[in-house]
Image 1 (cartoon, rainbow, N blue to C red):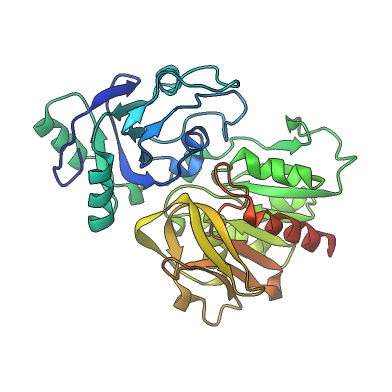
Image 2 (cartoon, helix red, strand yellow):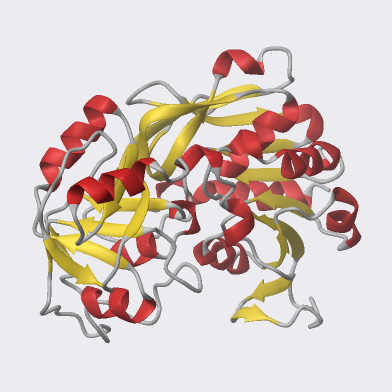
Length: 362
C-alpha cells in the first residue's frame, strides 16, 4: 500500500511480517543481489522493474556489504528454480534467512508508472487490514527526516587491501598509496577497485572529525556513497570542509553531494530519483559519453555552485542534472554515479585511475 491509499495485492516473499519505507524503483535487468546489499537503499522499499528476479540465484561472492540494506523488496515474479553454477540458494531463501519482508505477484508496471507521475512516496508491505495499515503507514516518519548514514556506517575503522578486509594494524608495505574513506554507506566493490590499483583503503566512520582522518596520514580522501538527504549530515559536511585543500578528495554519489555542500552549494530531492544501470552521462571536459550505474534520490542545484570555485564537469543526458564537479583550487572532484558499478557497466572505471594519478601528484 502507498501513502495515498493505493493497494496492490500479491503473495509473500521472504520473511513474514510487515515493513515500511520509501518506495523507489530500479530499472536494472540484473544485479539484484548487489542492490539488496547496497547501503544507499537503507530505509527504502525497492521495486525491481524487470519482471523476473532471482533467475541466477544467490552466491557468496557478490555481496556489497555485510547485510541486506533495503526496508523491503517488491518484484513481479521471484524465480524459485535458479540456474547458475555459483548459486547456493534462492532469492526467497536469502530474504527469509536475513529477515527481509518482500512481496511478489503484483503489477509492478502500474506501481512504477504511479511513482513516475506522482513521485516517490512512503509505502507498507503487510498482510493485515488495509485501513489499519494505512493508519500505521501515515504515522511513520517520512524518509527525508531520518539520518540513515549513521546506521549503515562502520562502527570502527578497518582496512581493505588485495585480499579484502584486513586488520587495521597490518603493514601497508606493498601498496603504493593509502586512502582514507569516509564510510557513509560504502559498497565493497569501491574498495576492490582501489585495491586493484595498488591502494590500501582505511575505512572510517562517517562522523570522523577531519583531524582524525588526517592522523591516518592518507595520500587521498574518498567520500563514499550512502543513503538519505545530504543536507542533514552537517557533522560530515563540516569535516569535509576542513579536509579540503589538505589532501586530494574524491566523492562518489552522496560523496558528490557532500563535497558540493562543503563548497557552499545546495541539493534538492528528485521526483523519483535515478536508479538503474543505463543512465547516459556526458563528460564536458573530454566530450565522452558513458553509460552509468546510478542510485540516488537527490541532486546538486547547479545555480548554487556559482562563486564556490566548483566547475560542473559532467551532466546527465536524460534530464540535465549535475553528474560531476571539479574544484581545482582545493584538489577535489566528484561524480554523482557509481564508477564501481556492481551492478552495471564498467565504462566509468577510468575515474578511479584519474584519482590515483591525482594522489601520485601529492
